[in-house]
Figure 1: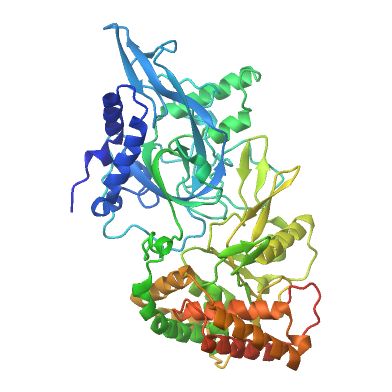
Figure 2 (figure 1 turned 60 degrees about the vertical axis):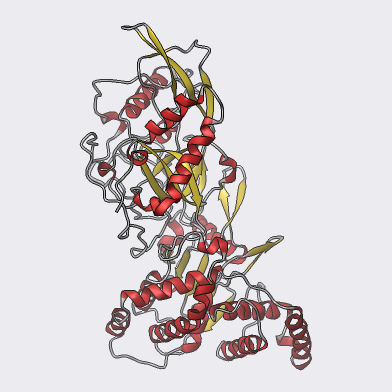
Length: 627
């Protein structure tokens, strides 16, 4: 195992060295980024870099290189900082030009703001949170993870502090002057002053009347989430990133206690003279949280993640370098089908459709229509037993990210699902439906009881319907709504037909009737050893990422077959039925490791659909969403 190099322990030394060699050449900034990119490519060096996701903050050395696997929860206005500045040492009367990039505070004497060498630069701040709903098995901290020992130079406060109770600092480094008075302007979100709450615990997500702008919390999209939140400072190409993107960020960790002191002074100044700054007190509180709670991460390099399955190389799905796995897909599929058939109490047809659902993916959009989505409604689920809870646990063991939403009347009327803009604090308040791509959303409709939906409940139901039908969420910006496309796999469990739209409804027909359902399902899960579960996890990610085509010959055959089916039964074979058949045929082919449709695949899809329809009570079309 190679030792941890200086470029990991002291990346600012590398930056300052390249800056000193540059002789004011603008190319030095590109050289810094290229240097770290090359280092990370060599011999899996990225595995040596400590991860904010897996290593407690107090174990990490300040100003060292770290990585963070995250989702962009919010984006903030660009801020100005001193890219280059000149310091004056009064004792020796010497001047020195220094680099201010990748830093939050200046260092090394009094800053001469009138110097000709001063360069004001611009950077963007993203508020990033761990990918919502990541399963417990989904950990990147493997055998190759860098071993980290506690830092002896940094001892942070282990409890949350209210802004009124921040510790007094004996020494205050010179603050980096910022044109907008926002050098530390970052993007936090809610607030919490409970000192006994764990640093990384998310608050509940009830939509209370309070706007939560007077205190601080981590603004996680899902209630009960744990993990670090981080302010990521982006120095180049920030327009290439979008809200809700999954990223693995490599950057320089900044947890300088001076950040809290600076924030306190700015807040006190605003309270004394509200006209002095552009920011409100609420905005300062959520944009400049204590660094011990929300560390700053100065981005050197960020890799967009096509998926967050640690068992599959992140580049595999991008390059479609999956040919070596295709041969094994069919055999793994058969094993997974057997496993899910047992979980679904002997219903092999439901197990087939569940596999198709789990590998579905929005691969393209035609106007407003998302292509590839496959929302599944499993009806016939018992209401009185904990069956849906066990079914969710099974899915949670198979997919990298998931969330179970119990559609009780209380949740529908109280939970904040749609993100909204808080203009007072100038931040996006997260909601349950702010999820990363390919998250599995499990809607448990068996929990819905009789009662009245209030205005919030109606909005939530509408938001879920739009998510299912159009794969979009309309964020609430008070005066208008802003549409954000998404790619979320929605599975609905219900007793009868769901009140929500779906692409396909399968009514469960169990062939097994175990005397103790909980013991049976627990035994089925325990029987799956970790190595077998890993095969299923790899299979689902690989099948979802495969490219798919239909040859001209098969296209013509499908068209002719559709004409014949219309002749036989014009009432039950519409254009929507053909579209559903094509989606099932596509997913069925991919599930067998075939990236093109064959005649056998088309016939098998027709057989599956015929079986599904035969057990589904026919209902009159009401809103066009009926499967």
